[in-house]
Length: 573
Image 1 (cartoon, one colour):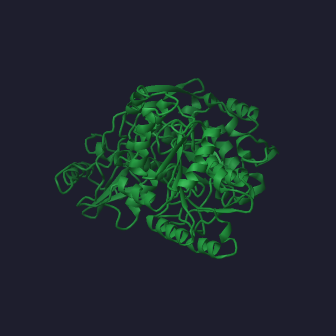
Image 2 (cartoon, one colour):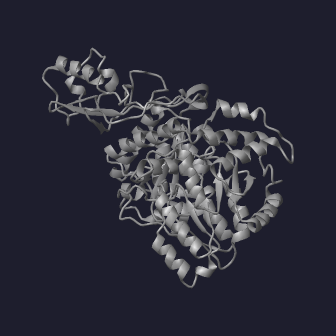
Image 3 (cartoon, one colour):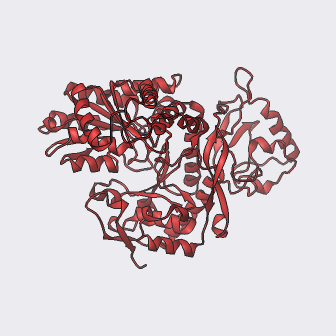
């Protein structure tokens, strides 16, 4: 285990190759019932284990299953071929037939029934839709060393050296592995100052999914926000959103305007709803029809809703918001950083959408809006880049002037030509369903394992990250002592995991919850990394229950976006 090997070197992926489509999981004639499995080790060995899910199927009144507690963790599809059988390795909640040989035979036979209507075999395992051809080392340290690293970083996880981090879940922004096709496209990048063919390819890729009239490249998403609110912001104005994320809120407020969150509220972070990222349409109507309606320059929607636990926004909610905004003459701007993940949730959760392609759903989302801001470091699958896209000619002209002033000429916008080409390819890859299936199931695997261990998370599980509910982990710790930051620091000290607090430290009085986000970089880590993270979270949760996690206070902070550079110190327990 990593925390027992201070000098060990492990590997993570830095380049992925191939887009192999995994089989889809269908309901079998026998009926599949998903169970949660703990997976500390694997018979496959190595660091590149596939994402496995333990399944029970019912036959003749008995459940036949792979182990959910076995330390050897023989998966269901391998158990049928194994000659080993042990009643101690079975889940205690599952009846164990007396005749183990009959059990194995029935498991072998049951595989023949796992076929779709075309006779295609159905497998429970969703494999990573890529191969790893380049790796880079991960370094681990002792708990004592990590405590020293954190102290030297002023107890601010953003200030840690990445070389001192084992699993970096701080953000999924620009931290993923690009594909071989993306790296290949970078080799033909044209670095002309103006009129580069790389921009043409980039613009075509953007408009293929988001057919807005004007596309302005920026070096990342926050630059697009800066350009937009330089034109739309201003003192006395108010910008409603389902929930503004940190830089969006900062740019709105830096312009002198007010950033207003109008998310649908729920009783608790564990309350189930398929689209907990939705905007409160009634609250938006009250704003637009009230005395401050004249002060609204635009309405924004963030998909998925990052601050609310990576929760998706439904197409129906987007339609209602669009109709309301347009009825009052307000443009609707989409913060589309994780548009593909949001579209996947729409396809899987919203009635009438299951048979539609991801691309079509994305175009429907875009058709409801008048513009978008985008960080290509998320669902652009790139390490840098972004854009602002809008339809209005007058607004585009104003934004173009600001772009040239702060970012660069309109056909590169602060990016190299090779970056534009990498984004163009990334936009083709991100809407492929095998990739999205793997991406969402990774989070699902991680989150369900934590929930099964009694660790409170935002539910339902989102698309790009696990959000621990620190206020439920540390119910007696007041917000002023930053419970989210306390849990985040413990994750690092106990296991070298760097996560991000999304609560009072980040948002101050505007924080609605005390969350700890573990954002999973795209195509970067394997199941063994996730399994290790599960164990670390379990240890931290046990320390929290024991009252062994200190609160923190801010010693020094900047006037805005304090979580990036504040100095903190722990309270003495």
